[in-house]
Amino acid sequence: MSTSGFHIGQRISYSSALCTIRFIGSVAGTKGEWLGVEWDDPKLGKHAGEHNGIQYFKCLSPNSTAASFVRPSRPADPALSFLDALRQKYAPDDAPAGHQEDNPIEFSGKLVEEVGFEKIRQQQAILQELRIVILDGMRVTGPQGPSSVPDIQSEKWQASLNDIAVTCPKIRELDLSRNLIERWVDVVGICKALHDLRRLVLSENRIHDLDLHGFNPAIVQEAFEGVQELMLDSTFITWPELTSLLPSFSALQTLSFKTNNLSHPLTALPSLPLKSISLSFNPLGTLSSISALHSLTKLTSLSLASCSISTLPSLSRARRPPLFLPPPHIPPRL
Image 1 (tube, rainbow, N blue to C red):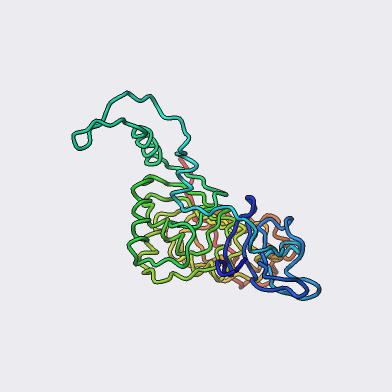
Image 2 (image 1 turned 90 degrees about the horizontal axis):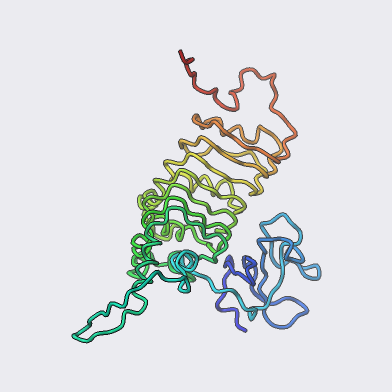
């Protein structure tokens, strides 16, 4: 089978197991073409991207068994658009319809049976009232489903965003963890259509393309302006990439960035009203690695569980700025 329909960084689901394509081509000592994939669950792999001593690709996971070679002909699970996944979970076609009266409908002077109209109305009503949506593991790729880099100026793209805005206008909390999203522009598109969004979960995706592909920065800012909580655990987004994304989240108060292989001293984050950050399960090693976070003056909670911290900052350098600013004085209650 040809590999023409595949690309590096593409997200695929095989029997509900998610992976990312890291290599496309031939492997010495074998016939035909292969896809080198990195599994989200490293227990499903066999190696770290090598075969017979030759390194064909590298994985983001530190695990030595996160990779496999698979044939392009292997059947993959179908990818879904955001609305297809939403309807599949919250308004499936096989859901029982409510009581329907036998009211005929007239079209062009002819009476026809009312078949499924009430069911469609009920499904639409359900979606329009949703406030908390959990689509984890639903193979979502973006507003339009599987496609190449979207043309954000096209009528099709704009129509897909409008459909989201009309179908589910009240969503405040959205969980898109463990999906097939690989481009940040698709996240922007979904969030741009959800004006009431306050909590966004993107954990365990592998978003490799952070380019805005023509999106006006002001529109990106608008897409995330209401988001107060952002979860990016186990995404393998780097710290520099994170600092480039966060300026769009002007109202952000809670950030979770666990299990992302952070090991180097962190640079300062943009000036945001952050109150809580979790960096747990990152091999930071020393508290001095996070000293740049002292600029976050509203920070009241910092989680560093399982960060292998073995070195504390020296207390002998009295003139060194504190790691964090002290909390504001709260006058006693009378």
